[in-house]
Length: 216
Image 1 (cartoon, rainbow, N blue to C red):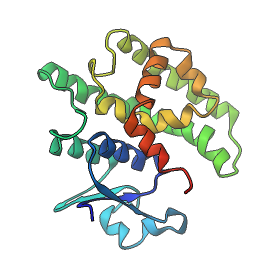
Image 2 (cartoon, helix red, strand yellow):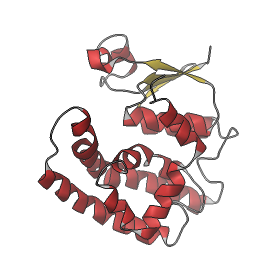
Image 3 (cartoon, one colour):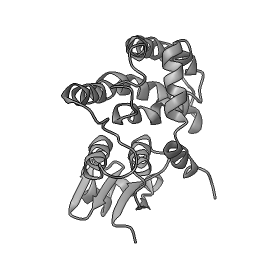
Image 4 (cartoon, helix red, strand yellow):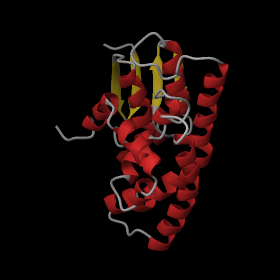
């Protein structure tokens, strides 16, 4: 049995983020399903793993974490010698840039992108109606963030540097969901952003994450 355990569900964007890091590193792990449809994430034993009643949660021996970005950073640093580098090797400038763009994802991109993902992706999935006005407003806000990305990606192949890092990986769940909706136009309207999306979503590790969502 794998020492590493990830508690979550493959359709959860936060779980997907942690899964991507595990696959990038080629680590053996056990994905322990949490039945969120029955509210198991709000009850014991899961509430002891994640006190906010959310997924994922993570165990690696005596290391027990929740919050997907904390999990991905632990994986990248603890297993630095395994699989693909998620902190691009380089000087302090490169390392600082990686941290900076990870913050940009969490503070600037994610809040807008996930609201738009709810409107465009999850509402139809759950038989709810999308609010067109809200979606349009959110697309405008996301477009302003992506204008900054477009400029940055004209200077660097990936967000932090010329290597794929956690700064890119953290975007994958929301990008994947939005590219399956009409909101893909916000990405496609920006050539450098569109190229970047194509590159990060074509990674082998990401294909493995998506494979977990297919019914067996």
